[in-house]
Length: 540
Image 1 (spheres, rainbow, N blue to C red):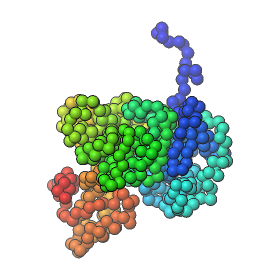
Image 2: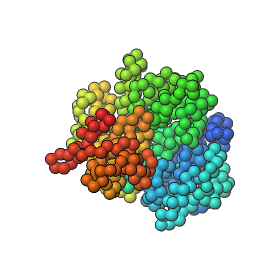
Image 3: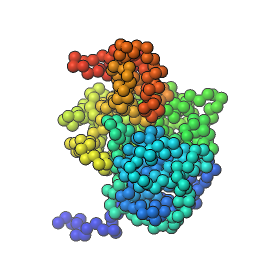
Image 4: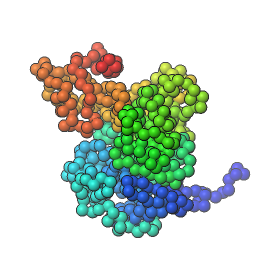
């Protein structure tokens, strides 16, 4: 036996499950009077916020909700969403944040597949919620959130959120998870190959990625964080837990408005925000007459297609420092970062922009990252040219896909998580995405499946063949471009007709912005050559 063996098994004295629930308890006890929430006229400190989270947990528990039950929420960036990130897992339940941009059929699928017992929804979404509930095969408890900063819409339920909280005890005694492997949340992918897949997060991964955010960004104590990133995306990239751990202040923004973003940054001395590139594009393209000068430095973290050099230059001139990250739903949000070196500051803007476009290196909390041959898993040369697939492994990889063991097995084959993204590795070890195995389009931070869009296009009676590729867009990063070959008897069909048809069958952000009428290039076996279509797009 080694001299370092005590002969004792781990116990409560020296081993406890890692969970981000510990963050709010500590912050409320140490910095209870520090501002926690700013939402319009609403102001709450950490003691008050902690009490509301405990009320939510207690009220859910009193209604019979407990360990392993799913609580779905369809909420914008408002305080109730933050409360759900703590109140729901406090009773061992699993939080399922729904994408507020999806249609009723997709929402209904997620509620059914995830077996939600409770739905907490903002009344802005009453129409889509009513339709989705009508598609369900079983009832569930629905709670209506009436945000005073919205003041519109219809109630989704007679049960009001504030009244529901009043049912709970602000001193409710919540319990630590039995196991850090226990599920904490359920996030659905965008359905790139049929129905969306339910990605299961565990307490350990949520805890570690929350710390990884802090380590990577060096956020310091008491950050003031502006919620421009939708909190339904990968649990807000774990920032509900990160900012809470640092006793920061959550500044909520219900709708993205570039001018309001600048006003909030100055008014509340915002230090950090996360966003899709479209948000920075909006700030950079504000009219000079409405553009405010920032009176302090701000850090912005963005993921997705990197903005062009002129946008990076414009926001840098405003005092915003850009950090580029990369991740997926399956890894709790961002897990790689284009870690910056001071000597790069002296390089020309175009060169800095090219460097910032790289997906970079792994977070300290991700144990493995490689670019390798998809078949052999042999790492590619670090020459910036040889393309391989991005693979990851570590504690911040998902638990697996809900009710889909086959998809989980395929994703984890060979002991690595297969991202499906193609990249090169540069000589300095930084990775850079070049393409996507599944042709996913990232538009304004949202994933759009070309397969799903093509399926809709083929339903149009005038279309003989269709293919969809990404078209670069300064505002959205990428937008769908549809190439369609019409049947001979329907040559009078116009672009507007195709777009209208798609709008009737798809969520708005998935609708193609451009339609090109043409015969489609094919291989000798009849396969459409999308790489040629991508070249054609560049000439549009």
